[in-house]
Length: 303
Image 1 (cartoon, rainbow, N blue to C red):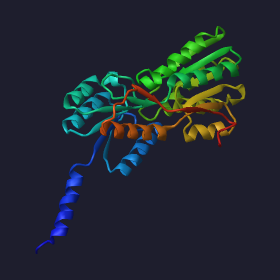
Image 2 (cartoon, helix red, strand yellow; image 1 turned 180 degrees about the vertical axis):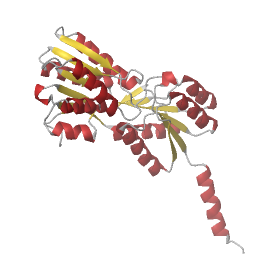
Image 3 (cartoon, helix red, strand yellow; image 1 turned 180 degrees about the horizontal axis):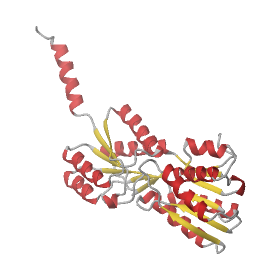
Image 4 (cartoon, rainbow, N blue to C red; image 1 turned 90 degrees about the horizontal axis):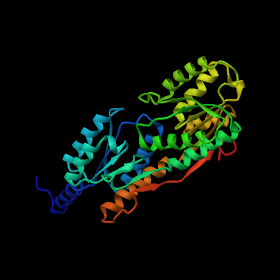
């Protein structure tokens, strides 16, 4: 059966377009985190509008796996790689991408000369706002439990700033600086660790606040405090990200008082826009591109 020339031309054009479609690989070990899910989804929405093909790779907490998957993508000569992990921990993979001529963009990652740029929230500012909130609420005095995660630069800097602010307040004592297991998202392990701290400090008033570098530990701490029947002590809890669970807890007007709302979708969209600009030949001058954040409390949680 003969195919009309016009139809044949359309088939060839279609296959050519498909063959040359922009291919992007997103690599992350943190897809279990709600924030990561939001900005990956936002990136995919923009990618779809641009006709890109996007492959999302989740190594489920395996950093070594991130290296190998970056190398896989580089060897496949994709048009770009989007990284959501500490670039310092995956240098070998980034070097492979560089040698292959494949640009890598950070999506809430960290600074590295091997990245075109990193799009993220200003962790310094977020930590300063929430730790200052804690200092003000407890009147600059009392024991504070910190939940941190120094293995991931965007979260590490939050802990550094909070440390500095708490240490600059003489009557605040850091009871513990906890790094929870995040493979399940972080809530369960944070609850278990907070339960142990509550048991070790049974006196009312012995714990004034819980400062968490993201919402899951704050939610876990809240669960532990509720289960221990210590919600009447006024333990001030703050988190970051303002995810739906955190917003719901803040709206109740209980111990979980504040969180920083990151514009996760804005991060995803900005990364996609940056990829598009770069692939179009624009030079990206900023090593870090910050997306604005907002303090969420009971007063504005429903806005």
